[in-house]
Length: 494
Image 1 (cartoon, rainbow, N blue to C red):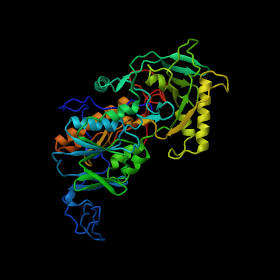
Image 2 (cartoon, one colour):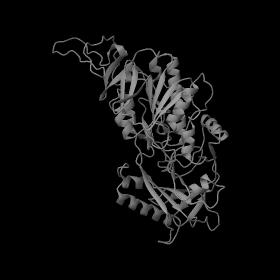
Image 3 (spheres, one colour):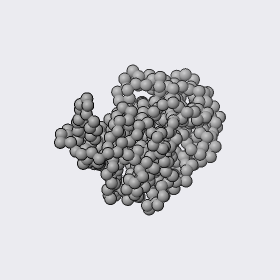
Image 4 (tube, one colour):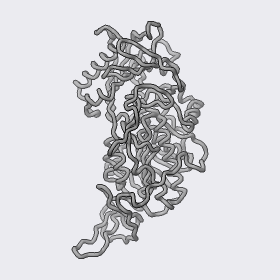
C-alpha cells in the first residue's frame, strides 16, 4: 500500500555493483548436491524437450537430463520440483525477462539498460504500470483523482536519494509539505514533525511509475499480460501466456509476489526461489475512495488548519486518511475533496474476500464501517458525517509484507533466475527501488563473469525470515511515522 518504491541512480555503467556479493553457503550446506554430467540427447523427446529415463530393475544407466544436451542444462531433484542448472556460456548480448511492472521491476529494467542489457517487462496492468504506485481517475463533472495505494514515500539511502533528485529535476515528483500527523478518537490530532521530506508523484503516483521507462530504448513493455509458464529450453527461458510464447530470455526476474507468483514458480524448475517466495506472508488492506463536495469538518486542536494526512489510532476500520485534492493539487481551489481511507491489517484479515469479485453486501459493509470509523476518529456526533457523492471500495488482498529475509534481492545463478521487490528489505518505495537496482547490477555482473564461479553469485536462497516493523500502510525510512507492528525483529520459522 503506502510503499516507498523505485529505480537506481541511473548513471553510466558502474564498474561495481551497488550491493556487495553474498556468496552462497558451502556446497555441503545446500540440501542436495548438484550433479554435473554430460548428457546425450534422447531420440524421443516430448514437445517441451523432456526425455524418458531408461527404466529397469537392474539398470545401472543414469537418468538422462530431461532438458537434453541442446540446452546444456542439468537437472537435480530438490524439494518438490527439479532444479534447472544452465551450463551453457552466457551470450554476448543477453536479454532479461522481468515479470512484474511495479517499482522494483521498472527500476530493475532501467538499471539493466544503464548496464547495457536489454529487457522486456511483462505486466498485468490494464491501465498502466506501477503496481501499488496506483492512481485512479474518475471522470465526472470534474475529474476525481485518488492515490489508492502508495500515498507518499521518504528517503534514507544515498542511492535512492540520487534517483529521487533526478525525478525532482524531471518534474515527476515533488515534496508534500501538507500537515500530516496522528489522529486519535475524538478528533485529537497531533502533528508529526517532518524529520525527512515526504515525496509524492506529480498528478499522482501512477504518473511517476509510467514515466520511469518512457525514455528508455532497450526496454520492451508488454501489457496487459499474465505470464503463466516458465520453460527452460536450449539454454534459455521461454515465457508464455496460456500457451502463447512471449519470448526467449537469458535470465528471468520475478518482480511480483502473492499467489500468482507462487503458482508461476511452483513448476518452474527453480525450487530455491519457490521456497523463499512461499515463505512470504502478506497483509490484506481495504481502501475506500470517497469524494465530497465540501471540505470535511476537520480542525486541528481547535485551530482552523486542516490536516492533509493522518495515521489514525484506536479505530479498527481505519488506519490512514489523506486528502488527495490538497496533496496533489495544493494550488487549486474549489476541487472536489477526494479522500483515500485505508483499513487496518486486522480489519482487512477479518473481512477478506476474493478481491477479484467482492460481494456487494461486503462492499456495503466495508464502506459503512470505514465511514463510521472516520466519523468516530474526527469526534463527530453519530450521523453527522457528510455523505460522499462518490465511493468505491477496493481490497488489496496482498497489500504489504509482514515478514522479510532482509536481503536486497534473491538470485539463483544455476537457474539464472532472481526475485526483487520491496518485501525483501521491508515495505517501502525505497525498499522496492533498492531491490530492483541491486538485482539488476548483480545480474549484469553475473553476465560479465560469463557464468564462471556461478556459486559466488548465489544470494538469499537460504536466508531466514523475520517480522517487518512498521505501520499498517508501510514503512517510511528516515522517519518515525506510525506505530510499529512489532517492537523488535523476531525470527520467523518457514
